Amino acid sequence: MKEYKIIVADIDRTLRDRDTEFPAINAEAFRELHKRGVLLGLASGRPLWQKLKEHAKEWGLDFEFDFIIGLNGGEIYDAKTDETIRLHPLQPDTIKEIILGMEPSRCNPFIYREGYMLSGWDDDLIRQSAARNQNESRTVRDISEFWQEPVGKIMYRTHTVEEMETVAEPLAHTLDNDVFFSFKTRADLIEFQDRRNNKGAGVEAFCQRYGYTQADVMAFGDAENDLEMMKAAGYSVCLCNGMPENKAIADAVTEYPAAEGGFGHWIFDHYLKD
Image (cartoon, rainbow, N blue to C red; front, side, top):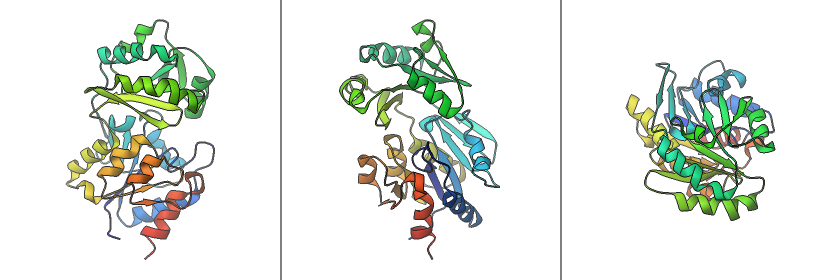
């Protein structure tokens, strides 16, 4: 296998499972890749303010990730310059169109504002999400608060997969247009964002800064918001716990799931084995 100059990975359900500790073998893989001069990146649907920059220290690494993509490509943090680039947020008129268009689904919308989550109403799904990410949750007093200022994306989480498949997802896809689109990041979570933003575009923006191409990139992912990044990369790997769509376009699939260090095992067994 050729050597890749950049390796980028999704976080949740790719590098870790939310309900388990970060696998030690993943940290070992990152250390070995860093030692060999590979540029390392994270790509998340979550915003940078949700402590994405702190993951390196949290996972026991003694170096920073070279870049971090947040909000599915809406934010790009460059560690070398300590600079954050923000791209194509949804504008108030578009936010209003989506929120009102999704009202018949009776699903609770939520968005990220700097430092907190803002939802339509308080429920167990919102409380669980806030607890997982250790951030504050607030509710709107009037629905118009959602479109008072631009946001990176809008999200809807359902209580069951069936609720997503029969109510939220069909309605969401009727709203897709030239400006924004919807996609699932979990079987029970659907998101809306600007069509120009995706993790692949975020990686490309970083590559262009330093004279690399997407052919220099190896990408790891598991969900729909990783598809563009995986398609554009020179080589892509899907976690075995990933969605069928991702497995179908990947160059390889891991033998172990995220919770068992699928990333690290694959790096050592297939990429660094020589």
